Image (cartoon, rainbow, N blue to C red):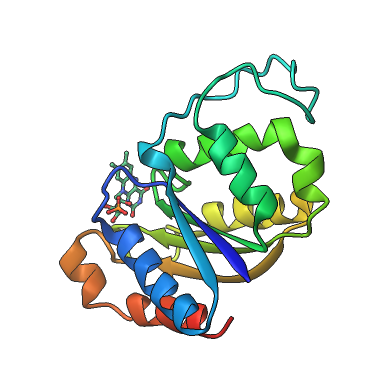
Length: 177
Ligand SMILES: Cc1cc2nc3c(=O)[nH]c(=O)nc-3n(C[C@H](O)[C@H](O)[C@H](O)COP(=O)(O)O)c2cc1C
């Protein structure tokens, strides 16, 4: 299976990317072809809502979204990786999702498999539900098939994340695909 991992943290070596790297290790061991796109460090701009793309055409922006679009359309699975920012995903990852607009018809026709990987400072029941709800809604709207989530609570520092159960959860999820 061809898997594209979309990273949404400004911290290249932060907690969410650590969880993603464990997922990738597992997925590669299981024989999958994994590519990583660090969306937070790519040349990306927010959707202008101009509708020039007609939800199925060229975007007015000339940036790295074409790289993400081509990877998404050629993949069997996408992995959304994000720190939790104010109970939601990061703006860096949300920008990628908003830019689906120009290829939403093609993308939703793929029945893409997806995974969600998050990292948050807090460790309580309040910290993840909004992000999970948003992800689930996105899956329904875009005909994505959710294949699992790793919701890293209490992952505010690299040390805390390394010492938690979540790296192994991420590895096991990748390995199980
Ligand atoms: C703008 C901003 C908003 C944040 N909002 C939350 C939040 O709502 N809940 C929480 O538990 N942590 C919050 N955090 C902490 C991060 O989620 C946490 O540090 C996480 O480990 C960062 O992941 P990263 O290392 O992958 O970037 C916030 C951090 C920033 C910078």
